Amino acid sequence: MKRGVILLEKLKNSKSHASPDYFLLGVIISLLLIGVIMVYSSSYVWAEYKFGDAWYYVKRQVLFAGAGIIAMLFTMQVPYTTWKKYAKLILLACFVLLFLVLIPGIGMVRGGAQSWIGIGAFSIQPSEFMKLGLIIFLATYLAANQKYITSFKKGFIPSILLIFTAFGLIMLQPDLGTGMVLVLTCMIMVFTAGARLSHFFGLAALGLIGFIGLIASAPYRISRITAFLNPWEDPLGDGFQIIQSLYAIGPGGLMGLGFGNSLQKYFYLPEPQTDFIFAILGEELGFIGGTIVLLLFLLLLWRGIKVSLEAPDNFSRFLALGIVSMLAIQAMINISVVIGLIPVTGITLPFLSYGGSSLTLILCSVGILLNISKYTKL
Image (cartoon, rainbow, N blue to C red; front, side):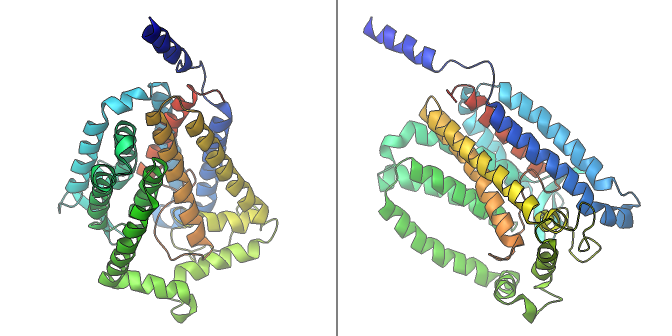
């Protein structure tokens, strides 16, 4: 009888509310709208030059955003427990895609990285799928094995081996930026689950050696480091992007040059609608515009953490934490690159940068986060 009462109480407490967290949804839509507007402003010069259509990039971005919103609405309605049931299958599919992208003839090379698989007129980036797939699986694993996480052999090592297997496959493309986001996100999840700091210190030492090895093994990574330290040493080569990015942000001042009035998008800053879109935003909308975007990301982080803390069980807590950590880390790295705090990594700014796989998977992820919010008392 007592067990039955406890079970009914748990079911009552975990009952879904009728609606998701509308505050969080409002932040997401705001970022998405700013992204569509800035993709147009930053890309129409390049689009007119390359395709004879100033609306080329923004039309595709609206299409990606539409597909992403549909995916978000779908995942927002799917009970989060469903992902737990299919976690292994999702992870297996992600690993298959990571192997397929490495096969010549299947994987497409862009910017020196074989990271895309072509599907008709569009392409997908398997590493983006892996970020979400690994978060779902790791949340499942940590929820079921949290009591072992303090054990180096039983809890910590299995998690780390899985994370670095995925990281290793992504580095074969190679895609250091996406790999960094994946590893840092998963490390936060493992740490929050209760892993010992001593285990992380040992891992950090090995990771530093490995990171140095990755940089030393590829000349272009070394050149990125030297360009970061002194971009003016090679202003027309490896230092070009960061110099042009700073040239965009600097003149923006407090209010910016005005929407559409960027000078750097006139063939100075390469592909300004992707990784360096925040530079064009800073140039046109100034410090105030950049601060508004940063504030929106901080609100997203704050609200996502609240969803995680209020989530009804360990799986949903880890899942929500993983999703919001992924978004926050990716935004932090991208903006840090644009303003010259860290070397160029080649990752997009969530919700704002032009891109198909990235935007669709991000919206799919926040749909899961919104579904979890239905089970909270926010």
